[in-house]
Amino acid sequence: FLELVGIRMMHPLEPTILANTPISEDANELCLLNISDTPYWPLRGWHYHTQHPLELTEVLNGFDSVDDNGMNVSWSSMLPQVDLFFQWCLYNKLNFIEWLLL
Image (tube, rainbow, N blue to C red; front, side, top):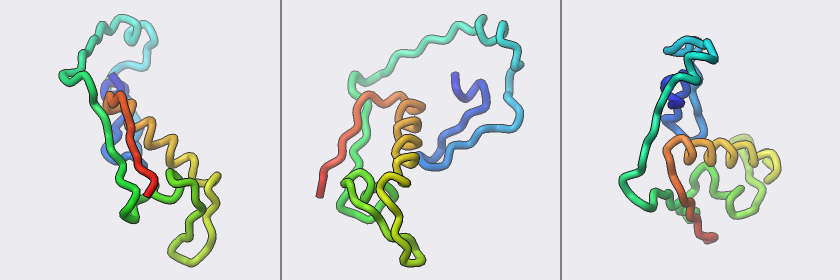
């Protein structure tokens, strides 16, 4: 459904919203859509391995970070990235997330 209204989530931290939706913006047209979907697998999840220097390693482990210029990046300022990650998970119909504190 989200692709029908112009939302793309190819990367967890870089959602794309098209300037023009592929379908009419008329609310009545959206209400008439009859879309149902069932996952093939009962569990559909993502394992985020926090041992490697990945985008969310520090925030998922509860630490501040240091940017490329050596400046401190606070844990709380990175929380919007976690929100984007969870939105990406919902977009991709995941029903569990796992990360290990390493």
